[in-house]
Length: 466
Image 1: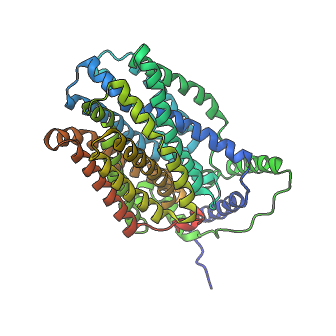
Image 2: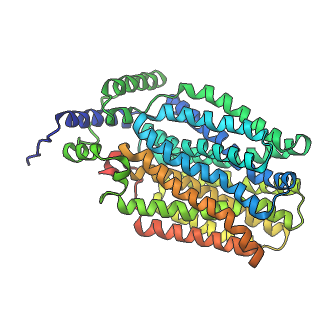
Image 3: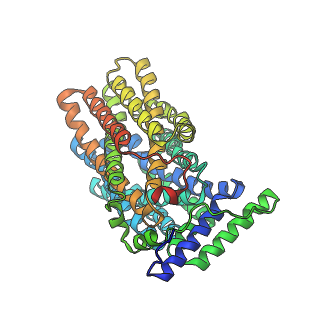
């Protein structure tokens, strides 16, 4: 069988070198070195999520401090998600153009400095600006972190590791509640922002040990740099195993014509090309409906508890306790993603989230609230692990961070709308209506995955994208 020779010889050469890099990466066993790189990314993710979750626990105090109306409180909650939307778009595309490592570092600086600024906010407008900038930094990190873990961890455990990374979201949420619980009653909400901003400085130093993605370097044509990073990774893995590494076998043959044409295509154009259009529609819709449900409920959950008779500190403690349910949730999701597959696990967690949210919204006593809330957080945080594991696998390296960023940005639109819709629903139809609408969003997301999703479990990234 004859293969047509590509017109662009240099592109064909890049395809061959990229294939070699991929083959070398995929044959590596998981050792302490890959776990160290993963821990660097995950620790940064953990601290980021502490900051994102703060408003869930501080909103009641801030409402009192600035005498906010429900509309103003909803607008304040929405500013973080507006910033995340901008960060998703900017950092996602920047990461595909300039590399994962540099953009990853910049995102931490942005939200860390904005956290310190939030502590000094003199008005609700100033606080809104700070929360927007925090959102830009945290939102910018999301697609870069997804792409980085996807590109370094082998296919047979890729989903599990990304799910574990997202699981740090649940840990960060609980830690955010714990920090708020112990600092808020003694020093006030401003010092909670100072404490979290201080954590960013520590993680910024740790991040310097993260290498650039050799997959991205090869696809970008920076072959010498890709070789150097790849050789360093192989040396580290070999040192930890104490054995000589096996020679790589060709896992993905260079697809010269297809890859060369695709590489010249703008990453955004790739998302909407005939090859990826249905995946993009599914991913965008999935994120939008999942996040309108999640943030619509969680941004107001402490306030709703206060309306049911809980004190501000009591509602913070209650939400922190039920959020612990998210920790076994992400562990369970990580296991099922590799055993059952991406489609069924993602759809299942969305449907169970919908069921639990409905019953939580209609609970009438403290015990039922706790049990249904714990179960709801179990499935909702597991759902997050599924979203982050599945999305970056849908796109090629040249557009992976862009695709994850744009999908997440659509989710932020839902996250912005959710906290703004909830007070209207509560005012006109009672608290249960908000949870019923959130449940509906989860159901629509599940249907999109079941109808349009592709299964990616255990497949090398390059084979999925071709």
